[in-house]
Length: 348
Ligand code: SAM
Image 1 (cartoon, rainbow, N blue to C red):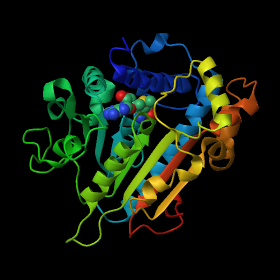
Image 2 (image 1 turned 135 degrees about the vertical axis):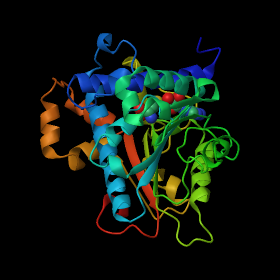
Image 3 (image 1 turned 135 degrees about the horizontal axis):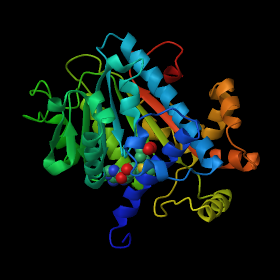
Image 4 (image 1 turned 180 degrees about the vertical axis):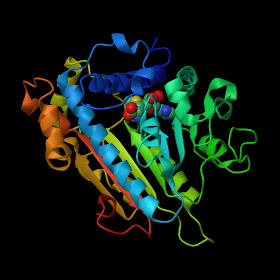
């Protein structure tokens, strides 16, 4: 069926990501009471190999830390909270974890975008699960729209779009145009608020699109928050998680290894090399941008106790292989501001 619809293979990577998360939760690498409500037959899903669990833990812990930092900065900047936009969000549970966590009160909007097939399934899962729906608000506040492909609630919005299409057409209509009766408490404003500190998340998604398309996306957001008449624009942050550097000979070996392990990778898109990762943001006027491999993140940035705790959960026979694999994934983050200061990771 994938050969008839090439995008079906791309969409199916969401199940891989969700199963990896579920596995890491079942094996106690991560705590996440929400993921099982988004995975069909969650109790019957076999765990993933230890290598995948460790990688999922490193990625999730690192991104959680960066999101947390950004939200704290926003909370201290007297801007009235912040908003997060997750592009290619799939079955991610981050909204629920943040909304029920320590910083939940400062989250004004959380917007998720994915293909309509993916958002339809997620919208249905949310409607079906009390645990998920309760976090969004009263049942009357939760509205399914656009033929089942969108869901709106006071804070959380799930929207369908093909991110490869020109954002002036796709995202513009969905995010920046006031939606009458679209489920917002104040039916007058756009979903994406133009004055709030905003964090963009691209977790395992840019690899499925051409860099022209991802550049256009970042540019659209930069322009959206550009405020020519009203002083300084609110901080715009972005986090990208992706695989890189598989074009070099070493990368080819890696690719073969991973295929042997049934880790599927899209073939068509050229992977960027490590040094080029921050330029994705710097070319759009971000002042700070930095990339770290998952290997370095696990070695240097995840708390020692946490690395120690997780390294005891399962037998990992090939530590060297783990390091090799983790060295091919990177988290890049950048911020475009005048106002962020202090010794945060965001103001490197
Ligand atoms: N970000 C989630 C996570 O990390 O758990 C899901 C990652 S999953 C590997 C990639 C997601 O990106 C899928 O849900 C897929 O449907 C979505 N995606 C890929 N290309 C897309 C596009 N052009 N438009 C919208 N969504 C896209």
